[in-house]
Length: 305
Image (tube, rainbow, N blue to C red; front, top):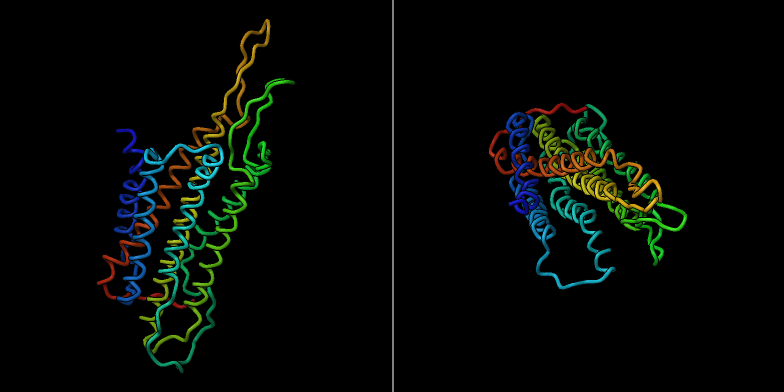
């Protein structure tokens, strides 16, 4: 039973949270053109399906043959890389702006930029999650040390002059490639926002503005969801590192156990990690619900800022 909870619990919790938040905020979502809704639903649906499949497999990868140390190192990459790759896949489907129908020569009443149609809460969420990822990456990277092959993925606790205990950590070996993917996710998102705001507004400015605001919300929702999943994987990895324990015979003092310097916050890291994962999946579920269910509702009004 516990395996099913670990495998599918975050996805189910994300669906419930996403459904509740979407139901509360459903009037804020406008309508995208049918073609764009289908592309977006397809991309986000693929990302969710593959994440659930990976979650199911990674908890108990029974069908894999035995692999050595290098195989375990590669396997340790997957929780961090998979969300970012799936996020880029979903952005590839959702990030291309729709064609603008209407008069190209319509007068523009205000200047537009890549933030014109972007909902501020989603922008703040994307920026905040990105900053948290960078901070944790730097802290974990500085705490990491090299293994026998020079890969910075080890965390070592010195027990005595001649003994130590070590375990893996989200060190530079893991984090540098992931930082490149994080930067790519942010860059693709900003490029998509720029492409959404760049074309002239259609003759029906209110309807066109609403659709562009919806498209910007979709892009930011997909990007934020992917980065939240990545943040959750980092926090869970640091929780695993915090559980390192070692001991030594201290003579008259008896057996002494030592651990990591941040063992006390281990449970908080675990809880925060699962909250981030559920929030990331909820963001993807909200986008999917918005483009599938809310697609039949008439577009609302979004002011051009």
